[in-house]
Length: 64
Image 1 (cartoon, rainbow, N blue to C red):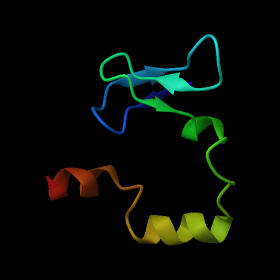
Image 2 (cartoon, one colour):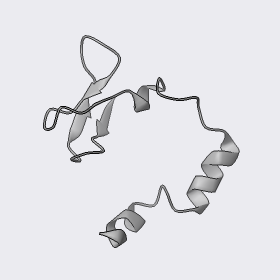
Image 3 (spheres, one colour):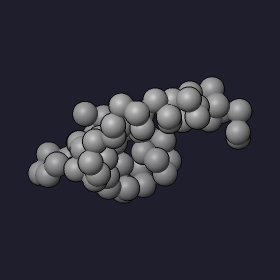
């Protein structure tokens, strides 16, 4: 799994020694994509987030 770092945007590869991702640029450590940081979201919650534009890539660019 490879995710974008929430701090700097670089790709965060999964660490070989543990279930976590580590950013090679800023050192941020995260396990959100592996489902360890919180319970899975319900379908209703995902729909609410989608309606709010959370998953819209263009909305993030417009705010900057």
